[in-house]
Length: 225
Image 1 (cartoon, rainbow, N blue to C red):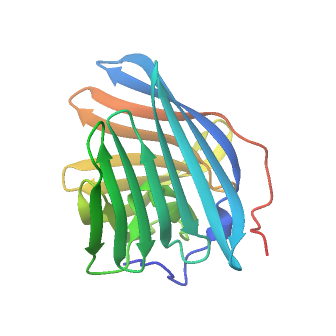
Image 2: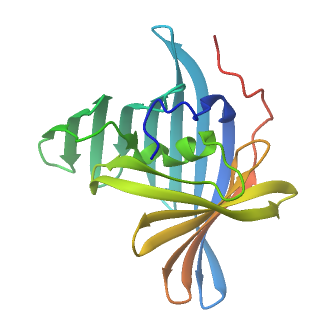
């Protein structure tokens, strides 16, 4: 079990920069690209604490989604999560086990969010930052609690199942289990710790594939002082 602040976490492995991905739906062997994802991570210092600011923008035709998070760079504990979609807006603040904020459906008044969880948790919007900060190696496995606004508090499980090469980069192959019947396979670069590819089965002969297209500039994996 890994919790925020675990001594094995190395947030400095997560490098700042911009990565772009294509999202493709594959049905019966036929692939169709349907969206793009831009992932921007930058380091900052807030009140002498190193944090990672992240903004993910999903574009699908004329519609889009913007998800932004702030995460403690040392403990990987969440501090803030904002999600802007056409149908709703979610604004969350994390303080230990307490989560406060608001949920605002389109054209309706906001609904207050104020809950105290049974344990310190990670944020579902930053699950991959945590995984990239883990001591991944052959046979490594861990589980960790995650808070998701829609699903509440639950456990994610990761297991390194092998090695591979994707776009010329050596990668850890990680099986990522969200629930008993939901899983994904994630390829994480061993050197840069970038997410290179994600494949998520959605049904028989039906899967979602996310592939890195334009990696950002290589920058030192050292957070600001």
